[in-house]
Amino acid sequence: MALILGIESSCDETAAALVTSDGKVLAHRLAGQEEAHRPFGGVVPELAARAHVEMATPLVEGALADAGVTLADVDAIAATAGPGLIGGVMVGLITGKALAHAANKPLIAVNHLEGHALSPRLADRSLAFPYLLLLVSGGHCQLLLVRGVGDYRRLATTIDDAAGEAFDKTAKLLGLGFPGGPAVEAAARLGDAKAVPLPRPLAGSAEPHFSFAGLKSAVLRARDAAIYKPEDIAASFQQAVVDCLIDRTTRAIDIADGATALVVAGGVAANQAVRGALSGLAERSGLAFAAPPLWLCTDNGAMIAWAGAERFAAGMIDDMDVPARARWPLDPTAEKARGAGVKA
Ligand code: KG4
Ligand code: ZN
Image (cartoon, rainbow, N blue to C red; front, side, top):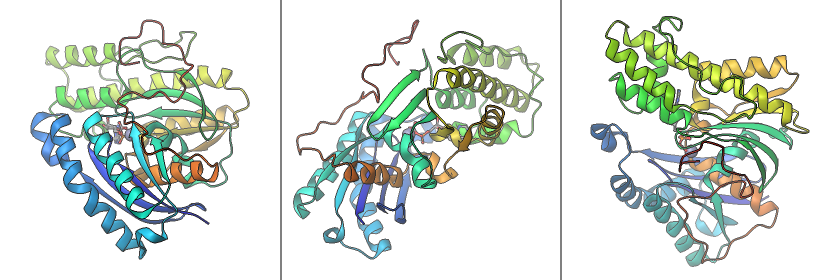
């Protein structure tokens, strides 16, 4: 059995965790930065990087103490090496490199998206490859066929905004606060999802790509019409996102060769309406359904430690000169989605 230390710092969460190769989370610590970014209504990269510098070492020390182990007991050190806000990624990766160098341990550079993609296997050790993954976070919205560790085929991506980004922008437009996803979900619970007519971008189109920019513009128009309650806009928006995710995932199920399970991961997977709708789709499609517990959906260190454990078991170790990357696709062979802007 191997013990892996994982470090995450790609966005606005600094996190460290200790996870064993048989899937036990011995410790996980996390420091959010909501207070620092709230006045700006979104993540400020420079503020995020500084907070990661302050928090990375204390969180690693805290996690080691919680687990009752020292660095000498660890078999490998896994750190997020991208994609993400480059300042933060560099802080976490350099912390991992320094610890690996000092303790003479192997370093594993983890793709943050692989952390999300494999997190359902930490939650459910019986989940086998290949599975169809809907990865919905603040930075990404993709459908992937997860064939094995390090082996991903991207079936679809967003041609503009990510789903989580749409939640965050809607929250900002409606004055619901930051972070946006949980705020919109809470407001939506009090509203009528049929009250505001909103579009379902790309619904019915042949390729399973996503688009959310038009939905955001429609939310802006609905707000400016000044005839709808914010809760009704929030509920109608959330329903539109759910409908888009279901329509596009239904299309992907047709082309996901060999998948026996539908899996959702990433921050937006914490949304109960999203989880419920996908679980229903899986059932109708004869697929098993898996979604990590909520704390494992949003960014955390355990998913990075777990991806590290899976890579370590496969002998995938990295050199000390492995770079930090702002962009790092899981499937380098995937073509750009037609109509896509720079984000895809
Ligand atoms: O995976 P994550 O923590 O960070 C990225 O890798 O992006 O995802 C963060 C995103 C944010 O956009 C946040 O608003 C969204 O996930 N999110 C939610 C919920 N909780 C977090 N969106 C909808 N409903 C939620 N309950
Ligand atoms: Zn993430």
